[in-house]
Image (cartoon, rainbow, N blue to C red; front, side, top):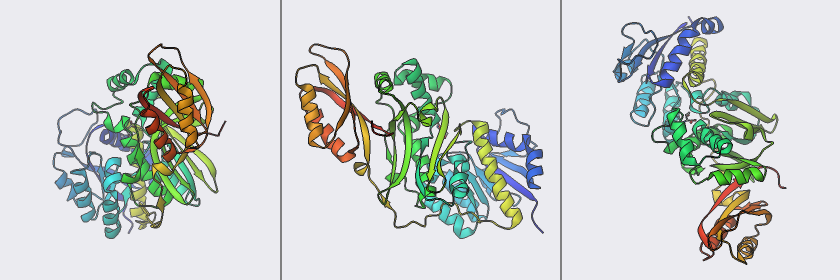
Length: 435
Ligand code: HSE
C-alpha cells in the first residue's frame, strides 16, 4: 500500500528552518489537499533549544541531538538547514546511509562537496532536493531540471546574491561608497557580520556552480568558476557607467560558446534597457536561454525565511510524492553525463570592457594608453575624461568594442607599469550589443 504519512526531520532551526516549519504548518491544509499526503515534522535538531522562534512546537519535537534525528525510523526526509561544510556534510551522508532522502539549502556545501553527496545518494537510491540552494524562492532548479529539459541551454545568467545587489543599488541611487552601503546592508540584516562570501562573489559562484552543472550536465566544479567581487567599485564608476548608458550588477554567467562552457562571476555593466538592470534591492533574477524556448526570465526573492522556506517545502513535497508513488529517483539530482565538456578559462573569454585608468593629467597620456590598447587589437568605442587636476591623477574612462580577455590582461599590465599611471587600472566587463 502506498505510503501516505511522510515524516520530516529538520537540522538547523535558524531563519530558514523556522521559515520552513512555518510554511509547512501554516499551509498544511493546502499541501494536504494538493498531495493527499500527511507531511509532518517529527523532530527538529538545533543546539539552541530555548530561544523563542515565535512558532508552537509539540513537546519533544525540538532536540539538541542531530544523531537521534538521523536514526529516527519515523523520519523519511532529513532537511539540512544548518549551513557550513562540517558537520553538515557528515550529517547528510549519515542520513543517506540510513536510507533517508535529503533536502538542503546549503549551496556552499553542494558546490564544493556535492559530487560526493550526489554519488552517495544515487548508490543508496535516495533523493537530494536542493531548490533552496539557489535564488531562494525562485524555482530555478526545477526550471533547469524539468521545465526546460527539452532544450540545449545556450546561457544562464543573472543576479543571484541579494546582498551585493542591495549594496550596488544603494551605490547607484544614493551615490554612496561601497563601505557605507555595506554598513547599511549589515544594519538591515541583509549582510552578515563577515560579508566576504557575498561581496567577493563567493556565494554567487557557489550558486553558479550548481546552475552550470544542471544546465550543461557537468560535475559540480566550483574551482573552475572565475570570481571577482564588488569591493573595488567606486560610486564614481557607477555614475560613469550610468552616463554611458549602463547599470553595474554582480552577474553570474554560464554560457556554452565555441564548443566550451564558460562560468564566471564579476561586476558587469548592463544596458539600462535590459530587464536585468531593473532588478534592484535584494531581489534576484535569472535569465535562461534555451535553443527551443528562447529567452526566459525568473524573478523573485533570493533570501529570507519564508521565500527560502517555500523552496524547501517544494522539495519536501516533490520527494513525498515520489515516495508515495514509488517513483523515487525519477528526476536525477545532478546528472553529470557530459564528461567530455570543455571548460573555458577567463583568459579565453571575449567581452566589451570599461576601463578606469588613473592617469596623470599630462599631454600625450591618452595616446600612450590607446597605443597599448591598439597594439593588442583592443578597439576603443568611447572615452571620457573627468575634471582637470594639475600634477594629480584623473580618471580616464575608456569603453571598448569586443576584445579578448587575455589581450586586456596584458594591456593592463603594461599600462599599470607606465610612470604616467598613478594607480591600478580598474576594468569591468560590459554585456549587451556593440555600439
Ligand atoms: N547571502 C545570500 C544573498 C543569501 O545575499 O543572496 C541567500 O543565499
